[in-house]
Image (cartoon, rainbow, N blue to C red; front, side):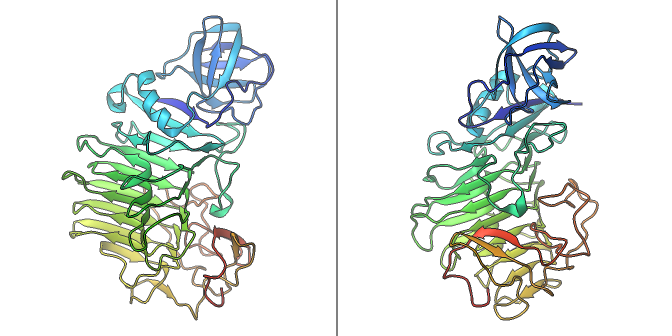
Length: 459
């Protein structure tokens, strides 16, 4: 079994956020502090500097605020010590990009399989605003199904951390939780989370869970995607419980492209035998894309892959899913999603299953689709609120209610939602389509930054 290693990232983190002036005793990988460590940034991936020779250990689990499990950077067990001084408690990295660049030196390389490690990169509060033009967060590690790379926010205050750092609240943006916001997007294309574009030999197994990302300042034809990559065959990607927003900047109409998830070809790279699971995410654009290119999920490689797009809510994208030159060996399984305020009449080119999706379009759709129009079977009642934040309430009798399909036997388990763990997703009672859910149809649901003046009559 692979050894787990943990590295925390916290932008603008204090050099030392320990509570009091504790000593530490470590016995067989269990660290006991003389003073309870109660700070909201303490948790898995936190680095502890201790003793007169500056020994280093990383928190790998929480027992209580005084007792934590710890490992060395390479996953081995730290030597026992008794009652030595804690010099500092902090996070080892200040951004996702610096973690990607620096972790390999600590663990001894980038091939997690040969190192027999499972890598956890854990995001904590405060804004990760590294400049993509200078330090692109390109992921070039090698992983497999038992040696995964995991990027997520901690939420379990019993076993992981002191404070829940995962944004929830039905997908609304939360400035009190970890978030990735680049200052500019000037490359073509660019992903907030981006995979290697030059090595088809790399195999990746990647989990991304509970990450917020915001993209803005589009220039000319340059594109923006929450997660982007080229090639990487024989790989698996799981993207879940994330919130992404695309904010209008300077762009040339008809040429600014945006996508929550997108893959493209470069230098003949392939996606052969890769699986992409995109589930329980919320993504939105702050304007309706009537004349811009923007697809919630997009693939530009004519090759063999499987894309499972389950139980997401995508708002204001021009279209739901798009393939370029897709052969019938590319399989899309698109189920239980909400595609709200899509604009294009012809929006998808794929083979596979399309069922129980809520969408708005002039197209005729496929069998088992749930269609709505601007004039009947409205998804939501009237919107209210400030200019930036709108509240939507699912309308009684809406097609959102009691229409989803119970998705069973999936790996990973996709039966949870943004606010609930797998296995407890509402089904057959209330709202069970999309990532934004409610057991009671009348609950108010704050969703997105939607500007006044562009919402159709009745909304």
